[in-house]
Image (cartoon, rainbow, N blue to C red; front, side):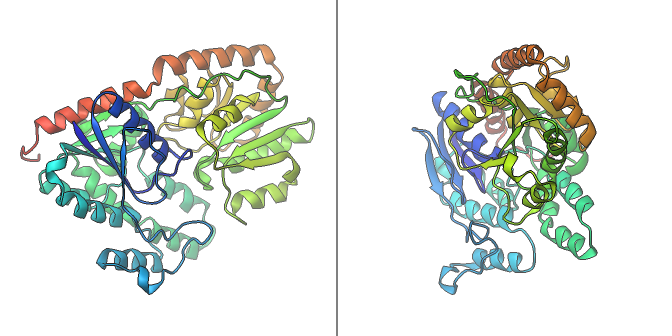
Length: 413
């Protein structure tokens, strides 16, 4: 099949969107499908055999100048005007504006594709694509309503709450598009239930396809660093639970020699940096970012324990990647994380999300028990190999494409 894979931003090596686009497109191409990725900035890293069509936005959130005001010469059309006007009024425009740009490109190339696969843009432009005659499959990793709830709970002022409600204004559009989507892919049963509850999607339209782990994630060939804990956070937001981990780490650090390695790029002066400073653990916490998959695998494999303290995850690639590296885990009992580690407790210790004391105790107990770490790491590695394959993801996703193409043109329910 000829597949147009859409992703409004596809940050390489970090965050689910860029990882998903790269590995799914590679395996679809290996299965013989013709795949062209349409992406806004940041653009993905893609493997040979997969084409990239850049769909440039105004890139208003790029580092080091997020929320920048573009020069008048950068404004090309009405979509650009919509993008900057939405940002100026405290909204987040990219899902809508990317979908409108992608729809414009696809209307000119209807004969080039059999199916369009949207990677959680859920923008209104996708409805125009389907009206033009191309079937659309959409992946919803999890409804962003969860992010909104957590952020609003953390907001301490009315002004901040109002600002967040405006920022998350795109969710009304996403819910509408999700409800009208005929073919939805979710990475876990947990995320599927939440998509039904929060977006009102018909469960009969959802197919659960777990994510995969790349072969580069493997147990280390050198000794792990004593006392090292590793965690990954694709965004400096309360949802990732890093504040809980930092508090727990600070408790443990008073009695033992430990290092916390965070695969993250904290917002300068943002919440993570402020907590690290307040707890006085600057010398024991190290941040790494912008690394390749091989470097990430080596980083995860270098730790004695990995931690995923998220308050919610639609799947949790960091959990699966740590398991593939044979790194024992302490994880939150949140969202799809229990699905990823399995029901028997062999692959990870689960703790209550947001509970500092429980997390500190679990980390301490695992650090003090090398035999259990070895057993847990081996069980995690075995489960990752058995359950999480990008080739299996591509095969299952292609089957959804086939159904969408076969029912092309049928009247929507």
